[in-house]
Length: 272
Image (cartoon, rainbow, N blue to C red; front, side):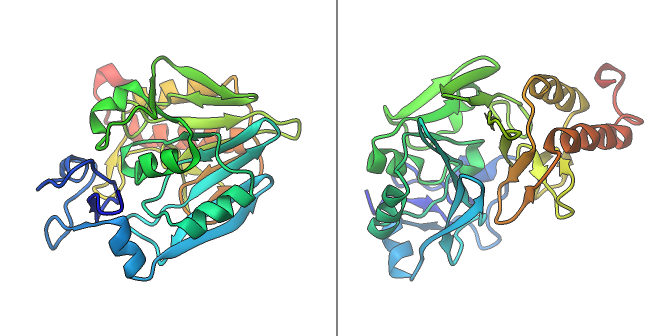
């Protein structure tokens, strides 16, 4: 499996060689300026990539690659008394990174926010014998079908004690976030479904980040309504140190209000 193709631009691994990357050809992403290019886990290792493991918050460990691959996001190992969830995904994996993660308690379940972050999720699932939770609305984007991938439907799905997936539907129809309920305020793991911005007191909502296409107001309102029953103090974004450290629920609420105040004036009547 070390030679399965990985798209250089988005970092998603496919089940067999192919000419195109459907994820990059979609209007939310882009094909690399030098055309479609491919790599593999073996090639990444040979090029000198290595795992990066660092604490990102209370009970949360960031897992990435150094140097970064593709979009450069990091995954998050959410450590709980009832088991560990790997939130989101990277392209890279090697034996040393497996050993490091096992030393942190391993991975009991994996959940990935949206197709741009599918990375090598099946490799990780096999390495830790863990299911991968993907919302069924994004089924067609899975480039390496496998029995480890669990497609769920509806608005919410419990995947562990105090751990709930919420289909916010921002960015992709199956775009999901992970809520962790804790006694000290809770946390939301949002990837870039709710993108923590550079200010780190706010989030934003986009249909496409690289192509600057804003999300539909009705989609943002639906996401806000689904999140309302789930309080959280922290919001963990998709990249290193992009974390709202306090008052996360309020940050999301006022961010949505700000976003909608700019989006609503020129929105079609049906979106108001």
